[in-house]
Image (tube, rainbow, N blue to C red; front, side, top):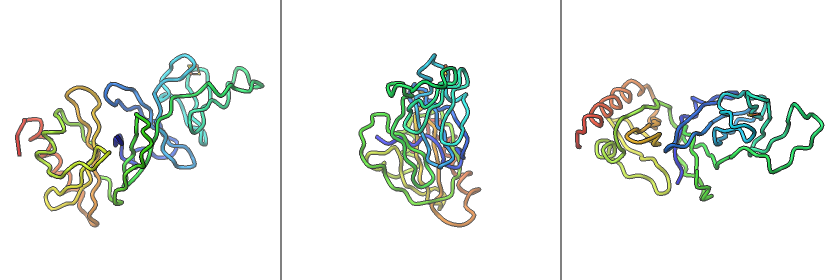
Length: 205
Ligand code: FES
């Protein structure tokens, strides 16, 4: 299952971000070449959070002892042993990641199905909601796409792609992109905040 975990615009080059996905701690980061990476947020050396590290070029460097990991998670350099050829078994835990329509997605199961394709759009917001996806979909309408946690729907006359992930019990994070051109941000935001208020109040559609 492909799971949207962030808006592309919120992870520019050189940035790391910690994300919780159903109890799992992940780091999203983007190097100079521009592709988004999604890894377990844990350094294989001593377990430091990689989201606290820093991006250099297309590598992510751990904050603690500076081990350097390249795309795919392989450790390329151990600063304390500069002449060491690092064994290929030393790797960060990298997951399948994809970007489409302004969303960053991850497939934790590594089922290697092709990622979905969404229309390019205008990023609106990532929005935390204390509710469940059944309640939100009953209010927002639209049917989830096969193999991905997202719907294409319309709120207040604005066509939206709404992706979601579950950070933990009772929580939901929506990632919303407007498909319609033009200045639709404020209308979309008003509709989303109303949706959140209704979902958190348990209002059925
Ligand atoms: S804990 Fe990451 S390099 Fe040591």
